[in-house]
Amino acid sequence: MKAKAILFSAAAALTIAAGPAAAQWVGGDGAATNPLPCDGSAATLASVPYNGGIPANEGAKAGQQLRVVDVPKLVGIGYFNATSLGVQQAAQELGNVEATTDGPAQANIDDQITLIDNYITSGVDGILFSANDPVAIAPVLRKALEAGINVVGYDSNAEPDARQWFINPAEFNGIARSLIEEMAAAIGPEGKFAIVTSTFTTPNQARWIAEMEAYQKQCYPNMTWLETVEAQEDNILSFNQANTLLNKYGDDIDGIFGMTSVATPAAAEAVTQAGLCESVKVVGLATPNAMRPYIEAGCVKNAILWNPVDLGYAALMVLRAAADGTLKPGDTTVQAGRLGELQIVNGSEVLLGSPYIFDASNVKDFDF
Image 1 (cartoon, helix red, strand yellow):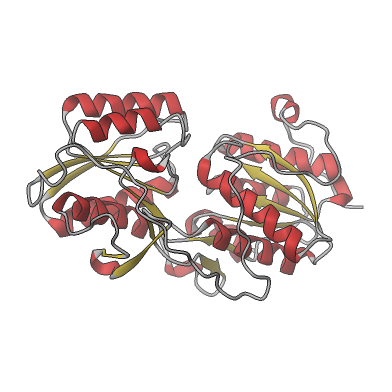
Image 2 (cartoon, helix red, strand yellow; image 1 turned 60 degrees about the horizontal axis):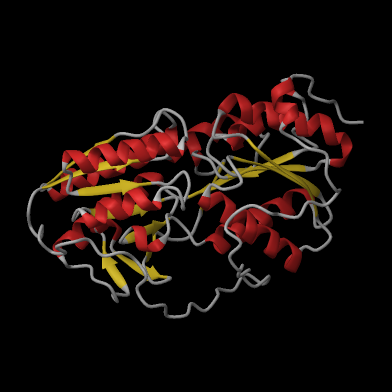
């Protein structure tokens, strides 16, 4: 028998409802999934017309000094510290942009909307954002466009017409394939897993999970998805939720996915404290600094992500290009400073690139 973790809170336990042995994903936006081929080959991308928004007086700020505010989901965590650093690097390189980061203390959409509304009133020239809710944030972003403010999203999207461009860190089905393949390699094609995410409606995580379900059904139909639980991008709640999953499923759980840069190290810590590193595998999205102790200790093989510094950098570069008119609806690529030429997909999404795998061979080479 596996040893069981014993530390969990009643509040965390209450968030996990008893369900069927194999969960069916019901979160997200309900959009159709597009699982990638099981053989690892790339999908063919169809050409999609521009579907982003248009700011009032488009082009009026070409070449001018810009005042830009970056509003991430929340501040004070390593991931968004890294995106903010990238924004500052781009501002310094450009020389004609003043950029500040100001986000809510918790991943709260109401607080995020209030912040953006306040900056619209104060008269900024540009807004960068990572949405806590794609639908709820859309009206205030449309208000920004109507005020002639350039709006670019990154990391977590809004409704397309509520912003001009979105920097997609990696396509949803690409992330999904990487995660499921790593889990299958760790627990086998008939293993059982659970997921710790932020909320069922957080746009990027919900889409990743939807694509994970589609890819798993297509390529690993004998794997069992036990449950998905919410943890609000909160470290303590993520730890408690992972602990509760370990207690609830005991020998039946072989792996835990972490869908946030908070949930993955928290799950790794729960597995470490429970003494289950050999029997429960943690796979997920996380920053290398957060996962380095678990990778170096051998409890976690790797972590999957992109470079969030580059993500913030690309977001400001794209906003500057949109303001200057060097990036226009219908373009298929955009020049993004040190990142070179980035591909435009899905009408108005700038693709940062393939997900990156941090493991024992390279995790020391990164500091974010």
